[in-house]
Amino acid sequence: MSGANFVGEYLHTLDAKGRIALPAKFRETLGPKFIVARGLDKCLFVYPPEEWDQVMEKLKTIPISSKDARHFTRYFLSGATEAEPDKQGRVVIPQNLRDYAGLNKDVFILGVGSRIEIWDKDAWEETKLGLEAEFSVLAESVAGI
Figure (cartoon, rainbow, N blue to C red):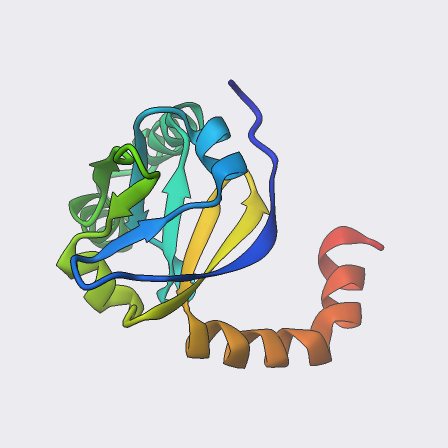
């Protein structure tokens, strides 16, 4: 299914084995296997296969002669992993990705259009407070709303 449209904000708990249950409607769109990667702003990005393919195509256009491009690509892709939910819809988040995003127990799962983001609860609440103050200015400058 191309053109994923993930929306919403969901509070979930990471269990002792590093598993998280993604919202059922997200799992339907993600399919049986998907990619979890380091995201920007210290969160994780979750991509359905078709969206991940588009990300990979964009990365192929980055010039290897650029040191910044090499560093970004290396760090981004080395942290990416294929995930597959168990029968209860839980996905194991590898320790290196939990550490990167500071995930402990409570996490927010956000639908942000073509991808899902997984945030530590406290980090998202702090980020969201800052965004609330800037929302109108951001809407004007980015989206022309």
